[in-house]
Image 1 (cartoon, helix red, strand yellow):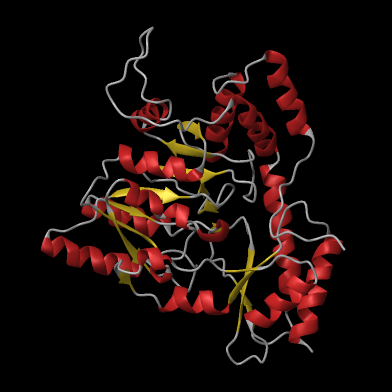
Image 2 (cartoon, one colour; image 1 turned 90 degrees about the vertical axis):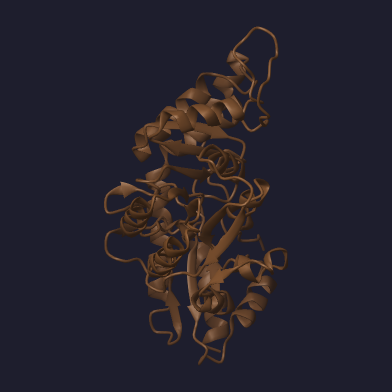
Length: 374
């Protein structure tokens, strides 16, 4: 019995053609025409003016925070329920994360909590250097509320859209209106370059600085001259070719994942106690992963379903363990917490890859039903 993965890469064949073009050109080094095309194509798709392709989403976030001026002693306010790569770059710069709870209405950072804390911080003269919301599981944060708050208090906005390539909010791509946003192309994301990321912005200086720092901060002279410490963060031309092919199919990938989500909802519509991640009006989530919760009143728990799926060679996973519950951040300040703690306790991600056949999804549904209906 073959294993069903949570979010396996979905390769169509076009990627192989493009990689062959790169090999035929012999531009195997990081620079090359395919790298430029990938960045240009992503700008056209997302509506951002500038982009730089990088080795990972974490690298993109590290550069973004450094370029907007985050440094030792600063606070960066961010989402507690996220992957650690969305929080650890704050510490690379000696800054301090402050974690915030989610809104139960959309499972992204709670703008009411942000507003309350910004009012308090303004009175004490201790505003954060930046706010860093996560577009969780392929759903945009509340951009209208958050951009308005950042503008009002003069706080920099960097959006972690690592999970949200293809997500839209009131007609604009996730991250729009921020100083910059970051994307991830890890193997399990909406689209992949095997490993990679991108920094996107409407500020040319931010992207130019990211390109400079990501190539070891080399000065534009014939010898190797350095006046800044940079990083080896550039994406390769080969990986970019995969990205070009993947991006051509992004809308199809979103449609397929949303269709998986709808099938799961229909399958469990008559199962009291199971609820799915909400999608408010005006949002277009990618449904990167289908996420659900089990009511505390149910006899079946997340752990029961996890055990059954493991035995059936089906990969399911709890929702992200909130950062404020992680041992590495045990001393870090948390604002709120009841929503994300409850979601972690009762929530689960189901197999959702865009290449997953309906027969595999039916197998997942059957195993879960055998537990919850048994």
